[in-house]
Amino acid sequence: MPARETWATRLGFILAAVGSAVGLGNIWRFPFLTGEAGGAAFLVVYLLFVGVIGLPVLLVEFVIGRRSERNPVNAFERLGKPGWTFAGAIGALAGFIILSYYSVVGGWVLQYVIDSFTGAYFADPEGHFAATATGTNAVLFHALFMGLVAGIVALGIRNGLERAAKLMVPSVIVLLVILAGYGATLSDASEAYAYYLAPDFGEISANLFSIIPDAAGQAFFTLSLGMGVMITYASYLGEDRNLLTDGLTVVVIDTAIAFLAGLVVFPFLFAQNVDPGEGGAGTVFIGLADAFAGIPAGSLVGAVFYIMLAIAALTSAFSILEVIVSFLIDNFGVDRKTGTIAIAAVLFVLGIPTALDLTYLDAYDLLANNILLILGGLLLSLFVGWVYADGALDELNRGRGSDGAFAAFWIWTVRLVVPIVLVVTLALGVSGYIEFLNEAFF
Ligand code: TRP
Image 1 (cartoon, protein in one colour):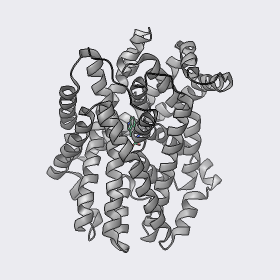
Image 2 (cartoon, protein in one colour; image 1 turned 90 degrees about the vertical axis):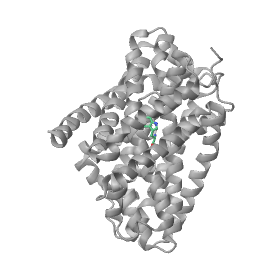
Image 3 (cartoon, helix red, strand yellow; image 1 turned 135 degrees about the horizontal axis):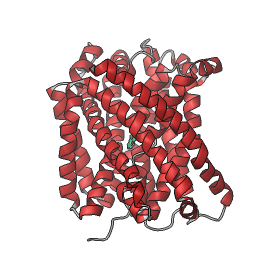
């Protein structure tokens, strides 16, 4: 077998991890969840969870990956605990489900890039979204998005993922800053900021039980946790690096970008009197399209927005595909190009139901995000906290100065706090899913 690939530079690794983290989750999912939960109250709880469970679990994945130098399915065997292989397998399964519908949404974004230039959504944003989201065009653009993702992954770690991330992540940041600047000039911007930034603590306590699972789930989703993306990316690290610094960098940049996305989305919505809590998954497509229709240079602003969204979605999507491809390479010595094309074809087929009927989007999204990812993260945390703690601590401290205080804090967070939060979230996720299935299919 050829030698396992590695990142060329530390910056490349960090940008690739940031690229995975920053995606539809930050720019599409975060604003509409915040809107549904009433604004700043959600932001506060979300920020709390990013610190309390996001960073610790990110480090759990980094530690497993760098120590084992394997994909999540094989990592446990390599660490001498083959009985835990199923935990990685759940992650890989979640990857199939997530990417199959993520690619459909990615296809919508590609359609909206074109539609911005032609102004196709200006007259009837709602009808336009309905026509975009399902049907033959949705299937075709799903294929196109999947093809782009596969093209980058087929090029490999250094020439594909690392290069693309170095180019794409800075572009996303620049474009978002420009859009936020434009948003600040719109009428009603100050009301939008108040809605987004001034938390009403009464509201938090009144809605705590719906805010907690959504905020915890979002903290996980936005950091690409629970399915082994970060295990896989850290497995290509090779030499000593300070995992804590890398993890903190990824968390801070990802959170800053989600925050920035809110500074873009809310002023645009307020300028057109669109209720940010109404649109759900359609917010970024219907509500914003409506907003772009009503502002000066809307066509150009819309194009910039959707191009930025497409780039962010691509860097996330290829991290998911990489998990599955690395499993094939590590296990069967399949060559990267063949493996990538085969898996992309399977994912394309899996995504077709979503591109034809939006019920499947929810069915896939809820199953993967509210159940499989949380379960995956729970198992990974239990493994590191209770089964592999010595090795994990040793690995966390490798490449750092010896500062045991953080490590001790981390391991106890992983042992106790993370499992408690995730078990509650999982229970709510399962009961919510049963309710959903009953309503949608029976
Ligand atoms: N974090 C990405 C986003 O916010 C989505 C994503 C990429 C993801 N890889 C993942 C989510 C792995 C969960 C697990 O859009």
